[in-house]
Length: 305
Image (cartoon, rainbow, N blue to C red; front, side, top):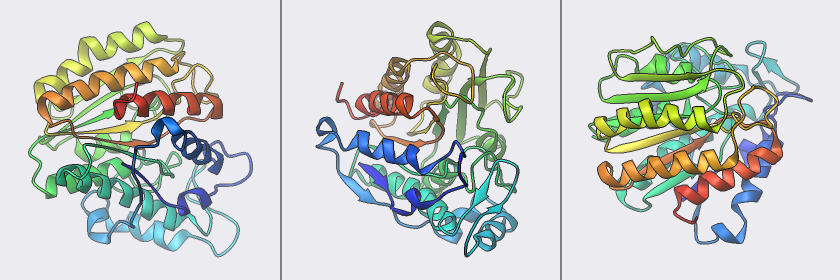
């Protein structure tokens, strides 16, 4: 299944901002190709306040809800702004991941991709930041725990470390967080020494790293950690800004690297999680690279390659 909502195309942070509506337009166009024709599309519902409160403090929820301007833009930080559609986009982006979890737990779909924005993995319990308003994948994880999942893994291959997700779950033994990312880079977290309560695994990559280093970090550290955890559900923060063409970072990955890591993730899900995987869009700011990377990721996710 693919979950999305029209409001996610209407969220805008201003002319020239890299996290633009064009990103999602490219993703949706890519996934409407006949190669993905058998995949069912669903309109994402809005997340509920109760679902947000599992991972976010009331102060953050109130701030986002009261910051949407009637016109123009309201800036939450140097990188993150809202227009009149941003609140609805954020509510439906988080709601998409909850609906996707419901679908895979019910057996309606084995895998799901959430074609949504704003992204989420930088949003902490208390703060919106880094283009993110609510932490979509964290909301999904908390909902899965609420629904009785005993162990789940969150896998994050965005080029920027998912500091918000790590912050929210670093003391939660039912959640494993595994991330590869360029380091040092925004937001400054993600050092290999950060372990949470033994449930956090970070594989920092130096600027200029290529496929070899990326795949080795997953083969030697991250995938074995996920395998040993034996998750009943796998969630993916799917950022594609590690691609060599991306303007916001300096890794040199190819679309094929995203297909490769997704295939490995799906294999683990088959062994431990009844094949259940939910993926949600995070970063990726070169439109051509985003198109190729999403195509590669979703073909592997939905067993189409």
